[in-house]
Image (tube, rainbow, N blue to C red; front, side, top):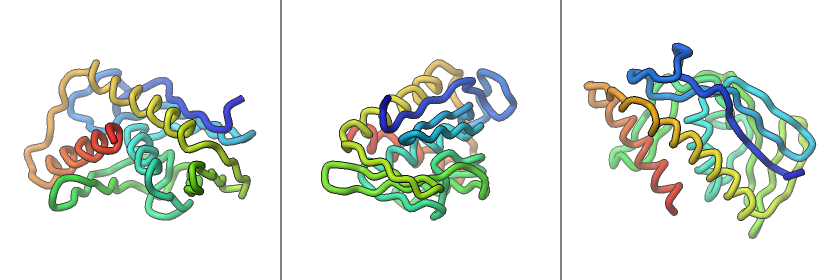
Length: 168
């Protein structure tokens, strides 16, 4: 068994449909395995994928900023250059720590259990998950991006950061 895996099924938009051009955040039934623990959550998987991509180069400390499997993402807050985004959501979700240690990552669950695995193995699992989420966007109708500059820029920054991190 892998030390870490993550997948999502039942991908859908907030209204429960398979294709909804007005919703910018993809949802689904996420399942993550860390060591011997299993985590299931109806998550905003598009946010999860971006958070996972961030952990390829940055540590993530449990209960700081966001959850790895967040309940929601109300809106995107872009930086000035539209290169990075903060996704604002609620306090509900499932979280774990990701710490870098040389060529490894250490995942620490809410129960304090630690799982160490090679960064390269972790990276491949994150890429597989992120690619699945992005491919779902691609098979759906094009998104109707909001006209309001703040919301439009947030969505643009989301994909700019995603592609920069995924193609690094």
